[in-house]
Image 1 (cartoon, helix red, strand yellow):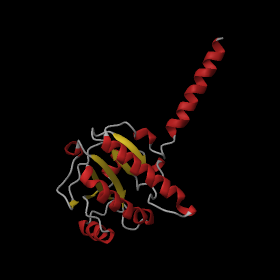
Image 2 (cartoon, rainbow, N blue to C red):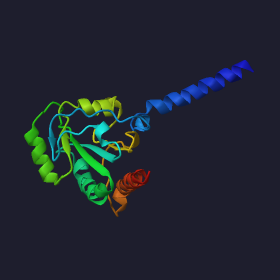
Image 3 (tube, rainbow, N blue to C red):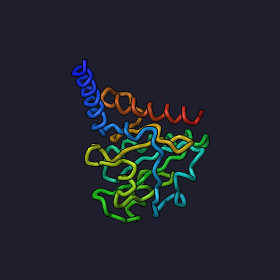
Image 4 (cartoon, rainbow, N blue to C red):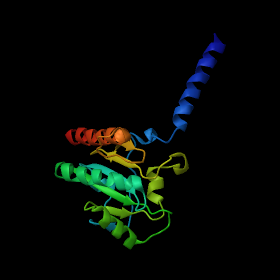
Amino acid sequence: MQPVLVTCLFLALGVEFSIASDLSRGEDRLGLPAPRLGLEHWLNSPPLEMDALRDKVVLIRWWTDACPYCAATAPALKHLDAKYGARGLQVIGIFHPKPAGDGSVERMRVATQQKGFTFPVALDAAWTVLSRWWPDLEKRGWTSVSFVIDKRGIIRYVHPGGEFHEASGADHARCDRDYKDVEQTIERLLEE
């Protein structure tokens, strides 16, 4: 009887370990309090901090200027901001230049204007905030990650990177599904 119990325990721990070791989907971030932002350079807003955004649903997207997935997602961010902003959604774009380390506010300004973003955008030049929100970057696969945070400041949804937007073609079916997931999460959290 004891060897069976040990074997079952080992298998249970092994399964748990394999699930925990796949960080690419971001499920390890769900249910955690949103980390602080602590960013100095902002466009379209004075500096924002997560504790001041309580009672709002927050959608945060890390993006950069040369990323095709970020460009494809930009219209979705603008659409969600326009559709839900008056109902309590705060969209925030966090510009993380590639390679990390380029602290050019002008580069962020140009990219923000090119995308037509009117919501707050902050500069994470050294990726320090990205690393706090999305630790173990080398195991994640993407840096263009999005988080939806509830009114209590808890991370409730993670889009682990790539693009999400409305689409009708089969080649972008996943993008459309992911967009619907983001939007449904926002709608549900606005009602809580």
